[in-house]
Length: 220
Image (cartoon, rainbow, N blue to C red; front, top):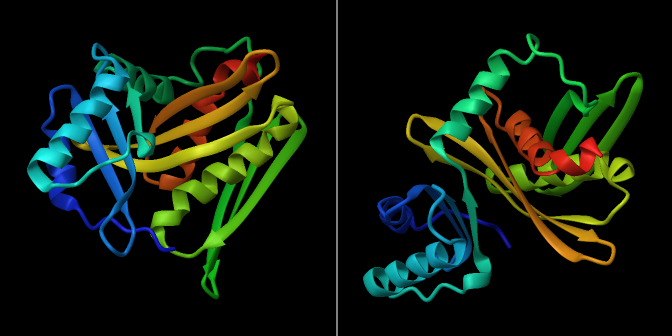
């Protein structure tokens, strides 16, 4: 089923909630929300942010939103600045931990399908992941995230699923958000989130957001 964004008024209203920096509402063709992504400041419990989203949607637009479709990523202004600063000075400060580097990100569309290929490297080792799905801008971020997760599957050694991946606007910037679910032995399901500022190419930012979510796992 195609995914669209047919509720711009709701998105705009959500951005005015206290502590919310950005919001994206994905809908089906019938304008019923199927995914709600919120970028919020720290300080308020994620469950409370979800309840605020539900209350506003119901009271103002008579839309009953299931809490299970709402994903909340909390990141402070200092953390966004840190991401930008690290991107500028990433060659100036050596990192003792070896992490995957992005070698190539390719997204191709044709015949109603989109294929994403992500190539990562660690030294002379090459790791590649692929995914394919329906064509359309709304599917692009998720397909790139899926390809990234497949590329790092060997390094993770644990099952990992993409819960959501999207691009949201916050102020004058756009940010890629990734929400992943990692199955950890003896611990169970662990939800991981990552964010990366878009530097011109959205697909590249999605890959970086997934790697940010998996940073500790990949660092060993």
